Length: 211
Image 1 (cartoon, one colour):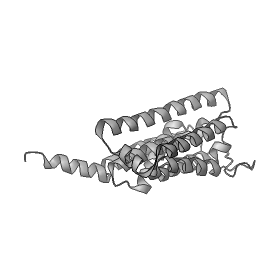
Image 2 (image 1 turned 45 degrees about the horizontal axis):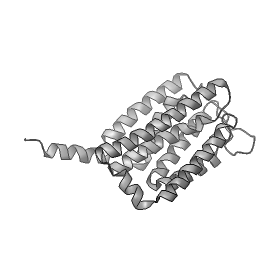
Image 3 (image 1 turned 90 degrees about the vertical axis):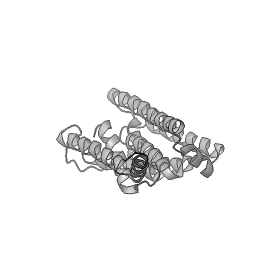
């Protein structure tokens, strides 16, 4: 499937399963899911794959920046929650491990290590070190990426075993991809506006209205 499809399906799947109950968890979880849904595709192969990898890294950095900006501008509470459950040393350790794993994975054949259960486990563990509340969202989105790619590609899920797994049910750029992309976009919007934090925010806004 294409990157946009992984992005929206990853977020919608994570939000649907986790049902975040606070604004910090919603923002951080959605950000982690966005990264988890895309990060597998940083592995290289053809020149096209290299270009896609650049897009994935740019998108991941942009998502991280948006989460940080939202926390700073709107005082979401992510930083306070982060410092309460972690330390600078722990953050640096988790971030460095995450970068090292992704750097290694980016040099592996396309849909091998970065599309395996091992990479999902390792990167989720790094996310758990960095921000524990966001780790399940990352893992669910990562798993959704593997599930979608299995519909049309051979993945080395049990890396380093060479055997690939694929259902070969559809094209990665055909009608199914477009339907999933549309469904993912709609679901993300619905899940965001109907989430517990969004309903709470709406209730507070209504309470200030003069009628």
